Image 1 (cartoon, rainbow, N blue to C red):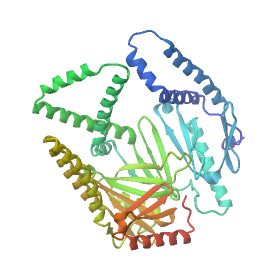
Image 2: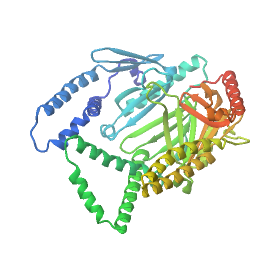
Image 3: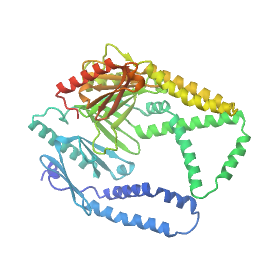
Image 4: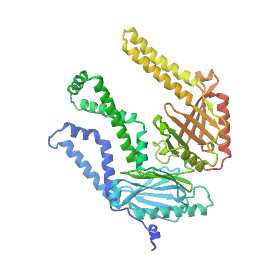
Length: 497
């Protein structure tokens, strides 16, 4: 038998797949039992094993046995028209995945995969009622051969059915779009949103307090020490703590960026975009043209200083309904990269609009009215009880919120041409979204009483990758856009997925 035909017979995963099956079991067990685990490590001290520890150990050992057996029950093979997977421990499951439904075959490697020279294979399908098919571990040469054979058979099936769209031409050359060096990657980490790590630190501190309280620890002594230390703080000490927090946040952002996007390579091949990235976990993502629903790109305030953009592909969701959107993000791009992606996806002159429109100023006024009523009521109550500091702090906070709402209103805009819809926005940063009209699945026009009295409406556009809103626009404009979208959806013969 030829090596290329090896998949015509049932194949088993690498023996190292047992390790990943067990690790997945441990992970799932920890998700369910983590409160008990924390109780053991925090509250038990040097005490000997008791009934709870023995029970947890028994559950872990009992769970490993069926995991090992399930490895021996897992087989996969290729027929002329489909990928066949047999699995199951007590209940046998046979998956038949037609090649024409397969969107892409991706590899994912953790550092454990790389140590054993194997890779996880993820097979993305279009419109599947199941989650994406996954093979835990295959030797890398075998995985490369499997992907090649699947794409060859998919192309043969598509050609036989005279289907031009969705064909994956594995012979086409890769056109590199972006590669991030280590120096560029550190620069990307420096301009990330550093408020998120600060929030994580605050959240971790709050979680610590919660668990101390939950496990019958008295945290008052701990906080008394903090209070006593706080009384001794000076302006210099406070400034040093803030500076230390900022430095820790920046370092955290750089480390997470390097781990997530290490050795990032983004390229165009045939009718898809592809990216490989990651340090400990080496991941490969693919976005086919027909599966992409919305293209997003944007900047935070720090990225604007250096001209960086993030490109995000929002793809049609497949399988898990809890997963609202399938997407991946490319950091460190510039405007040339954004233009290339738009033209490669939608053709020349994509994203060109003659006129951009702002939403009504009532979008700001209506939001500001509720903000003033909420904060104003609290401020009046505090003043009534003769509290001075509280109203001043809330007044400053209200002014800040109103200022941010005004900026958000000024940046919110939209545009329409003969084939695309554009929506822009943002508050401190900038966000852009581009939607081909034929990707629209459902359209709604809603009017609240405030809008109705002023001839305004909000347009809600649903796609397979999420929802886009255009708020507070003239109702006539909303109806015109709705008619145009419906018209293009009806006349288009392009596949939306």
